Image: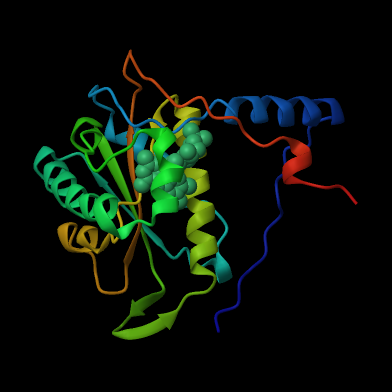
Length: 220
Ligand SMILES: Cc1cc2nc3c(=O)[nH]c(=O)nc-3n(C[C@H](O)[C@H](O)[C@H](O)COP(=O)(O)O)c2cc1C
């Protein structure tokens, strides 16, 4: 195995007050993140999407395998094909594949099989996970793939929020149509479909409440 060399870590070294303030400020900022199901068609420079993807790809991963791939789609033709295929799967989901309990849980969100935002949002970021890599025709195992890709998507959503943009974490399952449409190699599985854009002027979002600190944590 190749040995790694070690380099000095450069931290930020804020004061305790700064640490407290920054932690609160970041929470308040992230708490403003919402999933949007409608988007403005205002274009976004590709360089913005590139930085957002690189933020995601800076995430930790099992044995530093970075078992992810991001296909960023702005082509109108491709977005239409994705919308058509996603709606086909979602139609099946809403009219038979989802359980009654699941449909009831979704009712307050007023979602249905139609996904016009997949054509309207300027970018669709399709996230793929890589259970294994192929190097010189050889299969190389990746580790904690779901955890690693989940963390990378968390970084991606935080980067989108930081840029002042909005997104939807979308799962028109099964999502193997994305592997075919985007011509991904056989070691990649579609993980999430994330439209990214500016919010439209008239965006409405469900008035959800989030769990409080006591409900999501304890301190021992
Ligand atoms: C893994 C995952 C899958 C999701 N899939 C969908 C989806 O297919 N369609 C949709 O409208 N929302 C989807 N959502 C969005 C959730 O409904 C949303 O995150 C939740 O209602 C909380 O709202 P918020 O993101 O505005 O805080 C998904 C979220 C996650 C994390």
